[in-house]
Length: 338
Image (cartoon, rainbow, N blue to C red; front, side, top):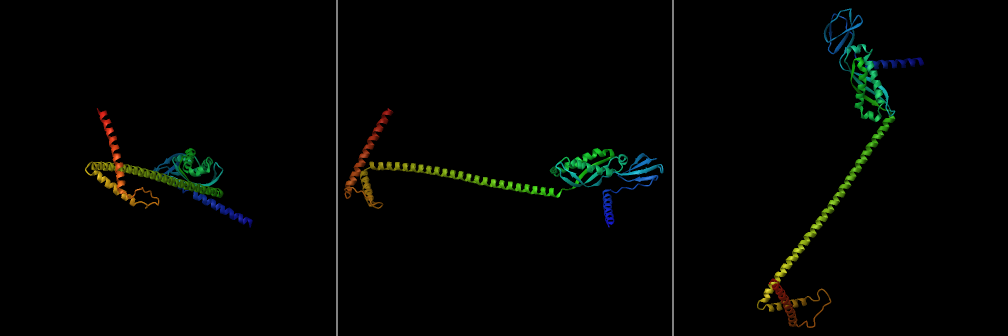
């Protein structure tokens, strides 16, 4: 029973290995028969040996060789070929194990070195690519592997070309196709990415709140400045209006006094003034006790003529004093002029 299980497992592993080797190995051209006339296809190089020793390389087109003496030993394709680099494990600088596979693009540039420099060029270049990739991965950290993937590919290509120059093969490109991380490391990286995104979201939200508060404060500031300027302009306009009103009243008062003085100088001017004072006296008595209960009355309220005479006496005295003062001023002015 155990022997049958062991046999089955061994057979399955052997089949898997054969299938992998078959998939990893490209199609190779079979060696042509040695005839006198040969037609070499384009982008191929046939290596000819004479008596077991290297003789020549047949170029594409018509070629003539001697049968039996000359033998076609190797057929090299000059096209760019792609080789699958199988899965392999590599340890980064921060001790994280990566499992990755890649694709290697190479080209034969020297058929002689590719034929006699190494037994199996493709197998050798594949092994060299694996070891070089492990070496380059070990020099950098995990974050750098993802961030500088392009530079990593270039470094691997340069390292392969240094060693493969003796084999007549040039590595054109090296592309990491797939990269797998341990489950725990992947979960930790996912948590880190989520935390970073939450951090960015919080920062953006705080910046938005700050900008909004700044805009509100700036708006309030401008509003207060505009309100103060408007209030200032209103006060200035009001003061200017009041000043102009006072000037207008003063001019009107001066004009009225001038007209009044001219009227008094005419005939019956004093009679008109007496009549005006009597009218104002009567009108003043008509408004007594309308706004307050306290009233101050003169002793002779019924004698209107005496009140008018008294008012005219006061007026004449004031007019006489004003004329005397005006005359004094005029005299001073005349003396100063002389």
